[in-house]
Amino acid sequence: MVVKDVLFIDESSNVAIVTLWTRKELVASKLRGRVHAVGTLYTVYGVNYLLHTLAERPVIDTLILFGADLSSSGEALIKLFNTGEPPPGLKLMWPLEEVKPIIEGVRVVDLRDAFRRGDWEALHAAVEEFYDPAPPRRPRLELELREPEVEGWPVPVSGQLVVEESLFRAWVRAVYAVMTYGCVKGCEYGERQKQLLNLVVSINLYGRRLGLERELLTYFSEADFEEHYRSLLSPEKPEGVSYTYGERLRRHPLAGDQLLKLVERLRRAPDTRRALAVLWRHDVDPASREPPCLVIVQGDVTAGYYNHTAYIRSNDIYGAWPLNAYAQVRLAEHIAERLGLRTGVVTIISCSAHVYEHDWGRAWDLIHRHYDALKSFVPDPRGSFILSTTGQCLQVEHRAPDGRLAARLELHSRPYRELKAIASTLASDHAFYLGWEARRALERAARGEEYRQDDDLR
Image (cartoon, rainbow, N blue to C red; front, side, top):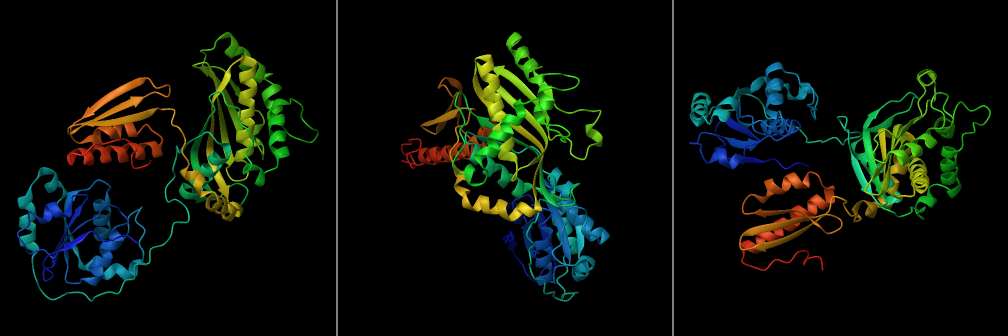
């Protein structure tokens, strides 16, 4: 449950100030009294907690908005009180009729522009104008804070990145991402699903061969994995089957043997960005009840590695992702061998990454059984960091995976802002680590103590 960020000052006053994203202590320090309470409002959803406070304190009949409205929470509050209807994006905890006495009995004074101008006198004048410590003009309401749980994410999320070396851990991370951030919606098969858009999973191999992990074989059979891969290489189409991936890849009616052409293109021009195979057929697939999910395969040669990207328009993350991913890894290894190269990074882009409702329980069971997979260490190909201190100065060295120096920073003040730019490009756990160690280093330096990186982990 969210804790209300409110400072109560003079509980006989009818005026309260909503500071939005501005620290309530800053505003409170400049007041001249006559204010019941000062509180923040960081999110649109926080309007519910403000309504709860107003229900408990009917003496408050005036809200003054004075602060930075960084998330449009102030705009939502104004629209609710001005129109009597919750604006899009505001989910009330209670039926509108229950809170109407509050909405109709409280005026909202918008001084957000005055805050932007730094006009504190406008705030003081508004407090003086509306201050009227009379008995409550509306009854006290008993509103229960009954916060609903999220079944599906309320807005579409696109662009989740998973970086892994393990196929099994990548699967657990992918399922967790969809089950946490997937929107609930229908599908053309008549079943609900949770869908995350454009899930990107990169399997970093860098010359390693990927085997089938024991954990994967408790959910799928080895024969299923191998059959899925073999079907990519075979141009044969069994009787009664509309298509196979192998047929589209090796015997496309317009493009012919696209796998052969992809390899030959990379052999002739290793720097090319045009080595790709398209499995979609515009003449039949738009009208098909079961068009191919795998649409594009693209190859790349960089730094002596063959790198492989597969675009899958629709991917059942719980029921099929491991089979699809394994087949793409094996296909990448096959192409790399024909080119005489090592396999680098295999990336699977799933435009519609979804889990069907009939698998939701099994998906959560997978996550709970293997939660440690979400916490495992994965080297970040974007390098590592060495931290040290000299006096009050934080020194940060960014090292490439081979150990060479990529950048050096010397931070004397506000390191958060400087490190934020670097951290935004890192894997999330590595970004957390960098922030954690930077804070430890600065705290040690401020106390005049020696700082040694990772000494709390030894």
